[in-house]
Structures are given as C-alpha cells and as structure tokens.
Amino acid sequence: MTEDNFEEFLKKAAQSYNAPPARTPREDMWRAIHAQRAAGPRVVYGGGSTMRESSGRRFGSRIWMGAAAAAVLFLAAGVGIGRWSARSNSTRSVAVSPPKTGSTPTLTEEPPVTTAPQAGAIEPSNTSGRQSRISASPDGARGRDGRRPDVIGRGEPQVALGVPQPNSTPASAYQLAAVRHLSEAEALLTSFRTRSNADQQMDAQLGSWARELLSNTRLLLDSPVANDPQRRPLLEDLELVLVQIVQLSPGSTPQDRELIEKTLQHDHVMTRLRTAIPAGSQRGS
Amino acid sequence: MEMVAYESRSSVNDTQLITRVVAGDAAAERELYETYVDRIYRLAFRLAGEDELARDFTQATFIRAFEKIGTFRGESSLSTWLHSIGVSVALNGLRKTKRLRNREAPMEEGLTIGASRTEAEPDLKERMARAIDALSDKYRTVFVMHDVEGYTHEEISGTLNIPIGTSKSHLFQARSKLRVALADFAPEWAS
Image 1: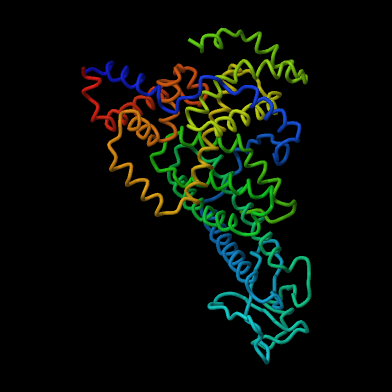
Image 2: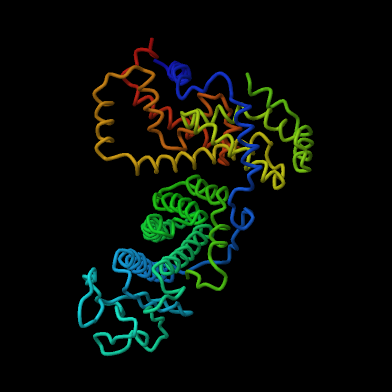
C-alpha cells in the first residue's frame, strides 16, 4: 500500500462526489441573472463598498466587556419587554425612557395599579433591579410609589404611554434595542478587524463578547425587528459572522481569521451595519 | 484538460474584456459569462451537491462580479477573482442553508436519519460522500478543488487567498481524514 495508490484511488472515487450534470444550464442561469439585474440592485447598504477600518481605532478590553454587559442587559430587557407587551392587553401602557448620551437607555415596566384589575392584565414575575412604571390608567394613575408614571426614575424625562405616541410602542422598543445591538456589533467587528493576529487573549475576549451578541442576534431574528426586509438579511449575515468569531479557538490559524474577514468583505457587513445605525445614535463603545 | 483553456487566456484579453464590461457592453458581459460559467457552476455544484443551490450560487457570483468589476484591480487573474467570489458565495450560502435546515429539521427526524445511516451498509460512493461532507469547510474546499476538480495549488491559493503551503497542508489533512474514514476500503487501494 503506498501513498500514491491511495491518492489515485481517492481522486478516482471522489469523482462521484456531488457530480455535476454534463451540461451547464447556461441559458437558464443567464436569463435569471438578467432578470435579477433588471429587477434592480440587490440590497447592499451604503452602496456596497468595502470599507477598511483605521488600524488606530482600538478598544480597551475592559471597555468592551463593560459595553457588552450593558448592551446585553439592555437588549434582553428590551426584547423581553417587547414580547411581553405584545402579548399583554392592548389597553396597558408602557413607560419608556429615551436614551441619553453616556447612559444606557432604560425601558421598564411594572404591573398596573388600578382599583379593579382588568381582564388580561399580567403581573410581571420579576421586576427587581429595574425601574419600572406602567399604568393601565390613561389619565395617569399613580404608581406604587405614589408618583405619576410620567415623572419617574431619577428625575430623567420619561415618555408616558397612556396615549398612543410614536416612540412609545413595543415596536419602537424593538427598534431601539436593534439599533443598540447593531452598534455593539459594529464595535465588536471593528475590534476584530483591528486586533493583532497574535493576540490570543484578545481572541478569547472577542469570542466571549461575540457569544453574547450572537444570543441577542438570534433573539432579534425571532422578534418583529426581523420583519424589516433590509434588517433581516443583515441580522442573518451578522449571525454567521458572530458564529465564526465564537468558534475561533485560541489555536486558530490566520486562515480562520481570513475567512471571517472575507465574509465581512463579501457581504459588506460593516457597511450595512453602519448604514443601518441612524446617524447620531449612540455607538457601542 | 478543460482548465488549460482558461489559463491560456491572456491577461490582455481579460483586461480588454473587463474594460468593455465596465463600459456597459452587454456582449462583453455575455462573453465573460460564457467563458467562466462552466467552471464556476461545476465548482458550485461540487460544493453544494444540488442543482438549485449551484444555480443560485453561480448566478449570485456573476451578479456580484458584474456589480464589482469596476473595483477589480488586476492583482490576480480574472479567473481567480471570479472563483474567489464564487467560493465565498457558495460557502456563505451553504452555511445559511445549513443553519436554516437545522432550525427546520425536527430533532427526532435528525436522530432517525443518523441512525439509519449508521445501520446501513454503505457502499464506497456513499461512504466517500459522507466522509467528504464531514470535512471542515476549509479542508473540503481545498480537497474538492484539487482532487476532484483538478485545480492547482496556485489557483487554490489565489482563490481562497491562502498561501500555497496552507493549501497543501489542508489537502494533506483532508486526505488523512478520508484515509481514516475509508479504512474499510483499504484493500481496494492496496491492491
């Protein structure tokens, strides 16, 4: 038994592997290409150009972890509340505090305080550690702490939701959570592209961060955010990249990282992320 | 071999073709397509194993190539550039497809499929296919390109943007894994 024999055997036997048809369906594919191009350009955010990051832009690992933890908390709260709100009685209202520069926006809720419970009212199982104010009364019934729901929490301006307001629906909570998440993802990918190839400790930190973002990406994929025809493919591509980063082991080769880089480039993930994040919104940092 | 025809295309021809495509010459687009579609489709089919997916990947490759050809700087050959797009499209597409199928496939069904495969007495063809499928993307891609489709390590290196040595290493690893997986058939290559 020789190596040559095995190689010859392998090459011969492998010819049956996924053997393509004798004739390439040239015309069919050409028509399909023509039709797709005539239908307009694919959704490539930001013109589809691949952008390189400045190598000088780096983030400290502690900042990463802090930002990641904050983002995870925020996103989990946002998605959870959004889901809960969507299921609950439509007459209930939610208090949302808009994001402020330098602080994590809070999005909280609390069971209604009314004299007679309404049908379908849900008592949250756990509101500890959250600033939570909900009123089922549109005229601003007081909460458990005796304050009106529209003047709550550390004196920060709050949006009371007893009446319909464009920024105070569960959908807007999802949007807020999605933008925050995409900002975090951009920060992670920027860090990934600018780190040193030899820095395995950094890879481990990135992997940990990516794992958290991956969970949130999947939550968003199952949320109404994914109904957006532009955002869904972005989240799916982001999910793939995050999976690749999570799977980077400490002993991973530069080729493994190159594959991720190629995915980023070919799918224009960075460009699309930046386009999907509204100007002026708080970037993940 | 078929590959020779493509290698024999001079860079001058490619440059002229690219210039015409960039200028919006529909005939040039068709010429580019006709020149490379067979190889791209074959490779896509080898990687995907399904006609529908192979068509999708091939179409996406050319659509993307036509969109991006203005950015082609000639650092590699046009063939390498196109194959690079093709492999990237195919691997990304397969990952997405696999993920979607994993989501959709009920757990019980997956277990049943696994059990039936284990119990069956597969012939060489089936065992070979399963062994190749079990390779990681990087090993499978290099193996398929080199041992199945006849690409050189230089072409693989350019397409996958990896050093030639890495291509050879991946091929060695792939063959080693296949040798283990196909050990039952050792008499066939020992004879």
